[in-house]
Length: 443
Image 1 (tube, rainbow, N blue to C red):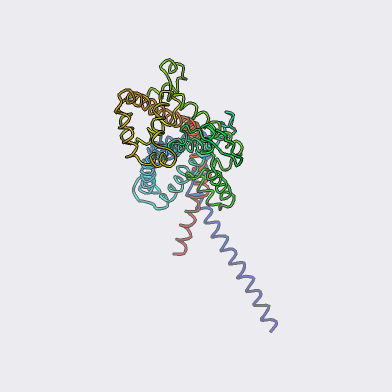
Image 2 (image 1 turned 90 degrees about the vertical axis):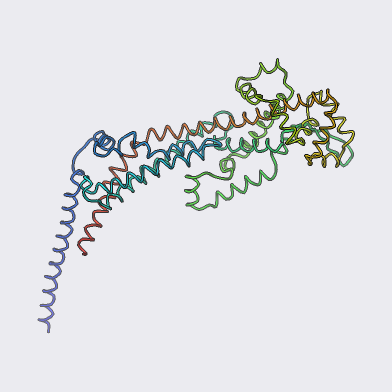
């Protein structure tokens, strides 16, 4: 019995040695085949030669510039997306040439096959090129564009506001929205204390109260809280997409946000009131940028004023009642003689009633001329202020766009080289080949 067990142990040892030998032969064969399949990996090339081969391959026109540049159309769109208004539209449109190029390049590599002569299509080449384009044409370039935008945005902190370009953009967007809602109209008002004392507050104080509302403070607090509790994937998504809430403002120092809004609100309020009563002599003293936009807003002002009176007479009446123009005082008094308190509030909410009041005022030729001239100034000032606010946002957008484009131009070719040499050649391609070999052996 003992003799049989010894024989079995000897046979097991021989079988173990045979199996290990055969396994080593298989792995040695795989290693040798991999080295034979990718001989270009064994060549010692300088980085300059590798980049030149990658970008100037005469056999692959899609890998050469300028055609290769179409692959970066979406990254250019990502840079331009920082522009207020039309930026997101440009980003969406520029995805069209990028996707066309990516599809054409992947299909071309599939058709070329392993031999590169279009004799036999190869799925593995399509997979390899898809991986290259996903990394070198989408993920990494878009990442450096976003990083470049953020770096450039930090430069805006040094204008004295201590806020990034993104935070300032969000706040200018809010101010423009408040301006469109009529929150910058002159509105001096009285506060009656319990003891009967009366305090008159200037219009600017009311405007600041309207801009710095508790609702906006709550929005910032809610956004800051959500950012602290959001998931990792939500952060990745927010990095590559556009936030719908004031994320940059919510994460900024709240004191700086309040100071920025207060200061800009005063500037807008004062400039608007100045433009509404400005004289020809004072126009020439305006800053070139303001004068340029005021002149642009003043084009065809007669037609614009008549259209405003027709479409929004309530706005015209409010501007008469809340004007710093002394010529409007007697007209405002005439309106207030007939409408007071709740009746005045009700009047200003009904365009049809406001239109009837204006028609009554226009029966007097002198009053009609004064109202028309005032409405022209109001309309020109309103449109000019909108242009000025948009221009401030545009400058911040150009700053971020420039940062994105500079980083893209600086890193596009290094990214191509890195992905091609270190990811595709050393990871993706060998993995695909190993899968093919295993598949053949199993068959």
